Image 1 (cartoon, helix red, strand yellow):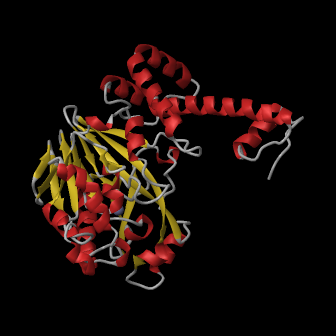
Image 2 (spheres, rainbow, N blue to C red):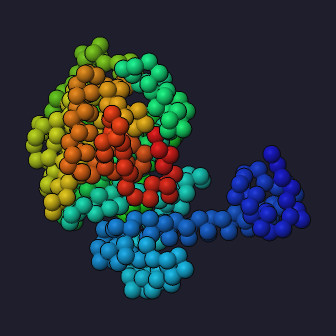
Image 3 (cartoon, rainbow, N blue to C red):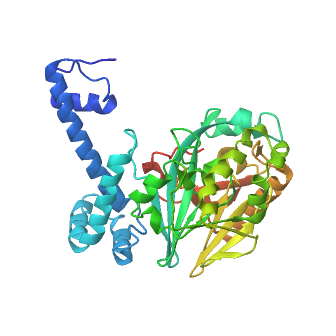
Amino acid sequence: MIFDTAGWPRSRRRAAAEKDPVSITASNTCKEAKRSIGVILSLRAAVQRWVLAITSVPECGSPFCYPAARELHRLIPSHPWYRPMLLRSFIRRHPVYATTALLAALDVTSVAHADDTSAGFFRMPLGKITVVALSDGRFMLPASQLMVEPRKGEVAGALAKAHLDDGVPTSVNAFLIDTGDKRILIDTGSGAFLGATLGEVGQHLRAAGYRADQVDEVLITHLHADHVGGLIDHGRMVYPNATVRVDAREQAFWEDRGNAGKVDASVKATFDAVATALKPYEAAGHVKPFKAGDTVGPGITALDEPGHTAGHTGYRVESDGKVLLVWGDLVHLAAAQFPDPKVTIHFDSTPADAIHTREKALAAASKAGYLVAGAHIAFPGIGRVARGGTGFSWIPVGPVSVNHASPQP
Ligand SMILES: [Zn+2]
């Protein structure tokens, strides 16, 4: 619908532009109004991003400034009336931190989608290290086509209970582990392999204050395109200084096209994706396979998680007694698979193993209270597992409502 907003009061024009900035106004006067409204809105968006960048990550706002982040953590719960004042004084005392956040915010403004109102990253401390969840975007998961349910109608029932339709907005997440000395990226998102709603890990890594050439290692949970596609851009290495680590069985499976007959049609394209994504790293001697149980980084152990792919791997990250389990693809549809871990997805190569792995992992995480990071759980995909009803439930951490990838599947 096109509105002619000539004669409208400023507040009404602004409200209309916010609601529908594309189709507002036709007359000359209104074109001008639209321009100024556009400027106001982008300035306001930049300021919002900046505030978001330094406030949305209450436990740790910057890899460069732990004391500042801790102070900020104390500041956030303060009363809204005092917060602007405290924030001003915080910025005066921590100019480096504030500038870093501002640069990150501006970077996001220049590269993000028009409807992206968030920073696309989420930072939190784990013991003495920092974990940064990076959003790759979202895709629509057609639950009735992809999920396999033990009881007819179970998935539809779980979706209805969660107020979700059959097409479930599903996050793709990657995770950066910053130990201070090393930056280790777990999975890379989809790159250009899976369409326009995905492929944002690179820009969100920049928004979080890192350059791609600062990444020392890339740990892969498995070789599906939504996890390795981001390794390359137009055939070139996105992480030129990184060693790519992957389970030896996983690499061997997808590099042998003779296995094409063993996989579901929905994941056959993985053979091509793997050949393309790993090629430049293999040519440079930057691929180093490991076996389950190996230590693959400081405090990081590779965990065997059979069922989804031939060498599907989780990572146990530990620092100063705090543990994060990076799960990979143990859960695709949280609304159905937490209540009943026996629900599987067509992408699973051996569903019985996938069920067993999921049941074991959920039980262990709920018992120990470990933090968990899931590749397809609503961004930031970090939370804890609790026993609930006959199954489990998910307790997300952080301000999930401020991110564009937030609707809870
Ligand atoms: Zn996946």
